[in-house]
Image 1 (cartoon, rainbow, N blue to C red):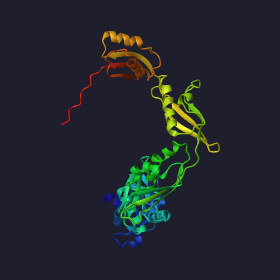
Image 2: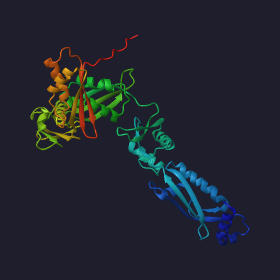
Image 3: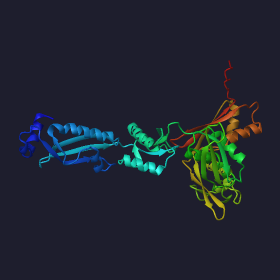
Image 4: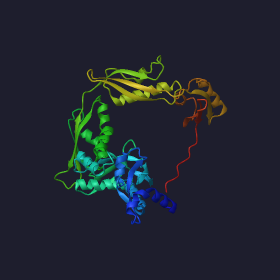
Amino acid sequence: MSPCRSLLLLATLLPQALPQANNTDPAFPIHSLQVTGSKLYPAAALAKLTGLTPGTKLAESQLEPELDKAQKRLLASGALSNVSYRYGPSGKGGFDIAFEVTDFEQRIPYRFEGLDIDETKARAFLKQKEPLFDDRIPASEAMVERFRSLVAEFASAAVKSKVESDRDGQLFALFLPAAGLPSVAEISFTGNEALTTTALRNAIHGVAVGTIYREDTFREILRTSILPLYENRGRLRVKFPKIEAKPVEGSDVRGLAVSVTIDEGPSFTIGRVLVTGTPANDDIAGASGLKPGNVANFEEIREGQRRVHAAIKRGGFMKVSSKIEPKIDDKAKEADILYRVAMGPRYSFARMETRGLDLHGEHEVKRLWTMKPGEPFNAEYPGLFLTRLREDGIFDNLQNTKAVLDTNEDNLTVTVTLVFNEKREKAPAAR
C-alpha cells in the first residue's frame, strides 16, 4: 500500500484508534464483506470460503496479507478462474472489503462406474464435503483430483479418475476402481423365443466380448447388433429390461459373465405407408413397394426408403433425404410407416458430351439420347442408357464405360459426360 493511502486510511479510522494511543498498529473491525461477480454460486457461500467474517479485527499491517490469503482460498476452491479484491475505510470505524470473482465456466457432471458404493450416499457425502457444488463440478484437473480423493475416502478403496465424453460429445468426470474396469468374457440371454441364443450370440460376440464392460456402452451394442435382428422380424417393441454382470465363476478367465433379459414383444405388420414433404398429387408412397399386412420388416422398410428416394431423384431432386418414423398401434399390432422427406433443390439437365468415340459414334449416341436440356435431371438415366448400349450391341468392341456428372450448384444444372473405352493404368507389379 502507498504511504498516502496508509495515511488516509489511518486518518479515517483515527477516532477508533484514540483509546489505544499507545498502540503503534491499532486493530479495526471488518465492517462489511462482499463477494460479487459469480453467476453460479451464492455470494454467502463464497464469502464463507474467504475465512474472513465481519467483526474480525485486523491491524492495518495485517490487512493485505490476510486478504491475499483469502484470495488464495477462493482460487483453491476450484470454482473460480479469477479473484481480485479492494478495500477501504467504512466511515464507521472499520474496513469495507469487496472481492470480485469470475466463475470457472466449464462445469461437467460426474459419474461412478465399477465401484462398490451406494451412489446416492456417495453424492450426499461429496455435497457435504464440497457444499459449493451439486452434480456438476469445474472441469479443472485440480477439482477432478480433489473429488477423486473424496470418492476414494468414501469407498475406502483406491480410485482413479478420467474425463471422457459421451455419445453426444458431452464431457463428464468418471470415477472408477484404480485397477480399471473388467471386460466382457461371456454373454447369455433369457426370454428369447423368436431368435435362438446361438443367433444372438453370433450377432454380438465379436463386438462385445473382450470390451470393457459399461452398462450404457453394452446397451448401445445391444441396440446396434441385436435390435436390427428383431426389427427385421416385425418385433418393434423389443426391450432389454435387465442386464446383470458378475465375475466368471469356476474359471481362470478374468472377466464378467453378462446375462441379458429380453422382452421380445409382439410382432407387428405394416399398416399404411405414408410420405410427407412431397407434392400431394405424387403417388410416392406406392414407390416403396411395401404391402399393408406384411410383417413390418425393417430391412424391407429401409429398402422401401431407397426406392422412394430413387423415384424422387428421377424428378431432378438429387439430394433427397428422409427419416423413417413408424407409428405403432399396440392394440392392432400394426405400424404405419411414415417416410418424412426433405426433397432438396431440383436440378435440370444441361447437356450431354462424349469422350472416347469417333464422330460417327458420337452422332449415334446423341441420336439415341432422349433427355432434353432444361428437363428435370433423372440421375438414373445415364447409367440405364449405357446399359442399354451394351445390351443392344450398338458398338463393336465396347469395353468399359462410365457416366461422369458435373453439377453446377449456382444454376442447379447437371452436365453428363459419357466416357467410352477409357484406358486404365495397370497396377504396379508386386515386388
